[in-house]
Amino acid sequence: MTDARRGLFISFEGTDGSGKSTQMRLLAQRLRASGFTVLESAEPGGTPIGLQIRRILLDSANEEMAPMTELLLMFASRAQATAQWLKPALAREEIVLSDRYTDSSLAYQGEARGLGFDAVLKLHELLLGDLQPDLTLCIEVDLEEGLARAHGRNRSAASDSTKETRLDEQSLGFYQRVLDGYRKIAALEPDRFHIVDGRGTPEMVADRVWAEVQPLLVRR
Image 1: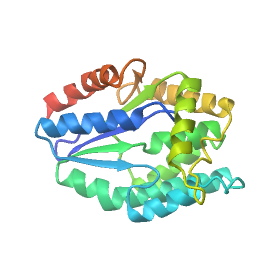
Image 2: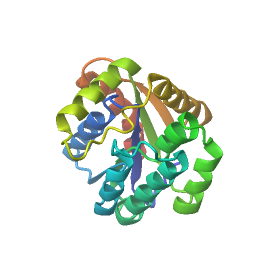
Image 3: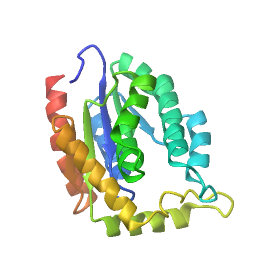
């Protein structure tokens, strides 16, 4: 539920290559053009501390990383961004857009890694209290198409010394479990967590995103 005493918190979710980052950027542009003050954050990373954590999490050399280590590092980055960026912006009554939040940990570590939703939710409560997005938009595309897009993007962007491809190198079965996790969240929290059809041009998807966001803006 949106708290009228603070800003609006919207998160974007989706499997790798879904186009969620593009959609968040397009929404930020549209909101700013409408006169809103917007903070953009991304996981893992965002803050300077979070970027250091990101290098460890996504480095393809760290194949031996245990699922619980992965989960704890994700929450370390998230807790830093929340304290340093998100909560202050919400207190200023800004609109906060986050490229991933705890729903990613539910889907990736809770469901796909087999740690369970309960472990993720307990960590969230311990580190972040009752802070949740007012709206979460999960961009859903064909898994194989999205992963091919992500692989191509990361191959062109990665340097020889640091390749942020560890999660991208997971199997198609892993990503099917991630998608199953997202669908499970949508069934558990239909008022907050909405799956958005990611097919079509970025502009077509952006219109679907705007249709989900606009009712919240009207209520403000």
